[in-house]
Length: 154
Image (cartoon, rainbow, N blue to C red; front, side):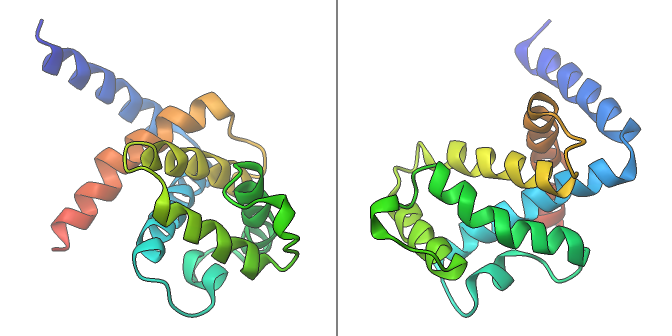
């Protein structure tokens, strides 16, 4: 069996797991990927209200509020913002973290973004998504759904 065939079988298994998830967990994974992609895009061309720009408008208000509170904390915990800066405003914290993201080595940046994607999905899932499930489901969703959708819209 070739490596390509083997990996396809793994993706197919993950697809089956994803398809059997409750809709709220599918949505949580989707939110994690979209916000992370928005972070990646924003790092390349920042404008306007950072947090509002990162969180899509169609997300439930309760989830949006949790994300507005949690995202700055995640960015500080990931050491993308130094606590010595004494920043307290969420907008300032996120802005400082995104400035740091611009300087992160391109080989490391995908790992940081994937980490954020899983953390965001966990918040959106209201604790119903484990870290390990979030890791492979977010990666599968990004590769098999998000990127294909983005490529089809070009």
